[in-house]
Structures are given as structure tokens and as C-alpha cells.
Length: 302
Ligand SMILES: [Zn+2]
Ligand SMILES: [Zn+2]
Image (tube, rainbow, N blue to C red):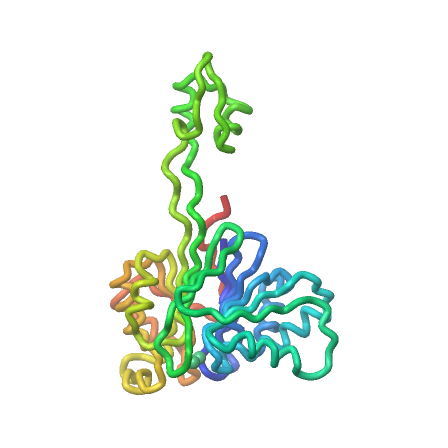
């Protein structure tokens, strides 16, 4: 499972940072979170195949989070996409997607579905669910929790051998959840498998001022991708526009006990993001300020 930051800048693109978008690959499919202008070109420069994007989650309707959709939708059409594409976002996203499909002249040959999500709504996928929560921004805005399903526990070969199971096909049967017979006795998978392993949890803040909903969603998350538009000397300005500082993000990460904090939506005023990293890492050491196209393995594939 990996996460690729396609755009890490806030509000407007700069030559260093495109506007926000990131691609999560929990398996063969790609989930996109936000889709700033130019995201398709960032995708082409990355190892993520844009034809594999199955679902796009938009945090809110400010242009820096969705203006990449029209181009991406039309390019998928150009390259012969046939499978449906689902685009989710806050209230009004269905209408937003309809207007994108009316832009310009093109003959759409696949289905694009727009969905309005309310806080608490869940989208259930193959092996995961994505849940929306309310973010604190001047317009309807959502953050998202990606929650992987719990995985089966680890197989304990020593325990199996002790129960008389022979190494070989019977081991595979037990791992698949089938019982086997050894020395005339039935051995159930539960006797040789450890406890289920908690699924991976990634939380994306979208644009938001610090808020209780985000704090709750982030509790115990493996990864928190949090906006950090500015440093704390500009906190008043951040609040005025419903944004967070690097300090806000780090405080929340520490309180929520997350694994790793990634800061995105960096204002174009920072040619060098070192002050943001320094500020956050002083509070929450496991902080990363990714650059565009940086990719992180969240967990080795099983
Ligand atoms: Zn924004
Ligand atoms: Zn915004």
C-alpha cells in the first residue's frame, strides 16, 4: 500500500508545488483525494496509472481542490476508459460533476457518477471503507478517513506442528480458513492463527481550522495528512480563512496519537518549507513535509 503526493501546495499552484491531490493505492485500484488543477499531468509524472483511479474524494469546492477534474475526466475518455468513475464530495458535488460533464465538446463513453456525501457517510470498497467527516472551513467541507478492513492474524507454524499438522498443503488450508484433520483430530484455523490484525487507517483533513471532528477521526490513525497552510506567526490569518498552521497540525497529531504526520496545502509564500517542518517537528517529531511526486510505502504488501 502506498501514498503518492501529486500536489502539496495550497490555494494556487507555484512552480514548486501543484495544488492538492494525493493517490492512495490500497491494492490494484487507485483512490484519489482531491484533484487540483494539473493533477493529470502530475499523475503522468508519477508511477500511478490514472486509468486505475476508481474513486475520487473531493474535500470541498474551492478551485484548488477540484479544478483538475474536467481535464482528467476528458483524458480518461480520450484513452478509452470504459469502467465507471465515482466522484464523491460534500453537498453539491453531484451538481458540480454534472456541470463538468457539460463543459466543452466531447462525447463521453463511460459513466461518471457524482455523489453528495454528508458527514458520517461511508463508501464501502473492496477491503476498505472511506468515511467522511465535517471539516471547519467557510463552505461545506469534508475530511476523509480511509479504513482498511482488519486482516486475518498470522499463522503460527510451530503451534500447527505441535498439533500434529504436517507442513505442506494442510498449512495452506489452515491459512485459507479451512479446518484440517491431523492424527485423527480436527484442527480449526482459530487454533493456529493469531488475533486479527488491525487494518490501516489514514486520515486526510482537507482544508480546515482545528476542529473536534478531525481530532476524533484522527485518533490512533497510522497516517494523518493534515493541511498546514502557514506557520503559527500567521495564525490569525489562517483562522480568518478557515485554515490550520503547522503548529495546529502537530498539536492535533500528538493529541490523537497518530503514527506519521504529513503536511500539505503549503502556501505559495513559502519557497522553502523548512520553517513549517521545524515548527511541527518540535511538537510532533514524526512529521514529513512531502514534495510533489514523493511516494511513501505505508505498509509492505502482504
Ligand atoms: Zn485549499
Ligand atoms: Zn479551501
